[in-house]
Image 1 (cartoon, rainbow, N blue to C red):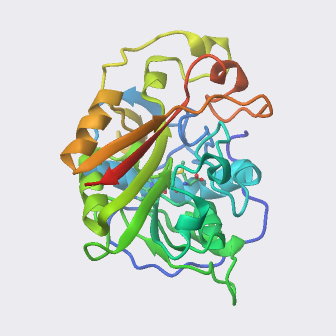
Image 2: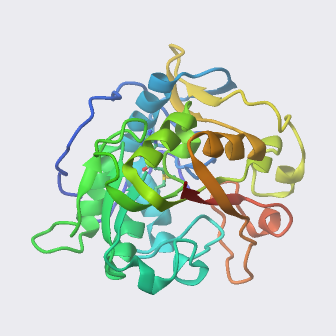
Length: 313
Ligand SMILES: C[S@@+](CC[C@H](N)C(=O)[O-])C[C@H]1O[C@@H](n2cnc3c(N)ncnc32)[C@H](O)[C@@H]1O
């Protein structure tokens, strides 16, 4: 991936916004880490990578700006792998069509599903094809413009609602959905995941499933490199200090937040979820791609993704 390369595909069309008012578009970022973003640097200026605290609003504002600036690169670099209408849980390529973490295929038909941190809504498009009624939510306007570019509905629309909002304040009534899901969306980027989990619990109907993936917490102890150097422990797994990229004025332009596996279990239980499964996808032989710090070399030895499968009590 090359810093500063621009998206060269069809021009996305403007997306309608239900807007939540959060976030801003300032900052001059360029992710250097190759973390969840896959290292798709997009800003003109150099950002400095540090470990330091980053609050809730600060994190959302940085994420919104970063994903707006880098959506084109992300979709260009990873769009083929993701597919326009596939549900891929992470760089290992675990596909919901086979994994069935959301439940049996026939049970999806007619369900109201909320996808959080949907990006270009590839997963929602797959869900719609299964007969579900998805709503694709993302903080970044540009990601949702890509959802419209890919389309799927009539008249240049996605075929299901696109909602521009922060997962920390979901703009839906209580009990609106049967199922919520997220493939690497929002959770790795928020300072207050317990707030997101509480919101998901609120908008789910009792018994509803909540399934989400994120970087396996173990990876936070290792160098974030796809090669052998990425097999060396360089930090404490127990250090929850956020990874922050800041501009020359010290403004946060990119952030990822770490919790241990145990932290996640406790956060989910406090929000009223039962943990049904914790899936650690193994790296398949067919997958030869390198995505940021994810690679066949590391994937064969240490987990790269954790998928939490939960039920609202
Ligand atoms: C790694 S991308 C994943 C996108 C998509 N799920 C996929 O698999 O390609 C993370 C997405 O989370 C979104 N995001 C980050 N923070 C968010 C927040 N607080 N609320 C909603 N979406 C957020 C970003 O805008 C971005 O589109």
